[in-house]
Image (cartoon, rainbow, N blue to C red; front, side, top):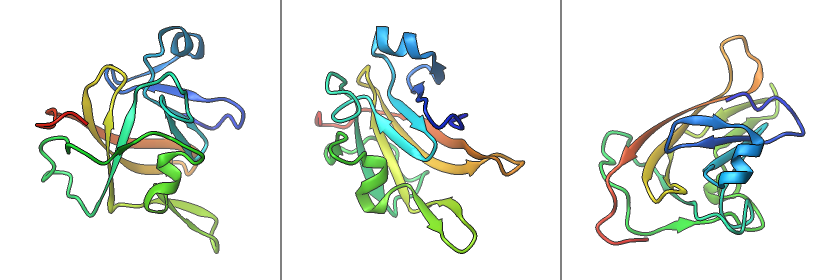
Amino acid sequence: MDATNKSALVFFDIDEGRELKTDEAFETNAWDLAFQRYTVTMNGGGGNPTGQVRVAVLKDQGWDSLTAAPAEGYQQDASEPVFSGVEGGWYFYNLSVHRLSPREELLYVVRSSSGQFFKLRMLSYYDSAGTPARLSFRYQRLPEPTTAP
């Protein structure tokens, strides 16, 4: 995900696994996550009050062992985006070398704009050449929880 533009959001539809152009994101309201440099917001709460996206933050949860979406713990962005504030945010910042590193112990479950569930883990803030704000992440669809969040 190329979030190198300091003044523009990059919108992502997790249901379709694709980036949306800004006008399409606003017209359809089908975006789930938006990226701007290291900031990740969701289509719900502070990111967009009309959006329905919610995210649960799971700590020390293995990727393979999460086989269904949790039934509770979902939040929307408030004064601080969930990806930045809950459990300290999705990254560590190393001040001595000025580099961001994903927090591998955090796993996110996204309830998308269409009501589907996906597990998501942030992988990197840099591309293979070391360019910042070229985020990569892994995601996979999950079965719905037994009780609606």
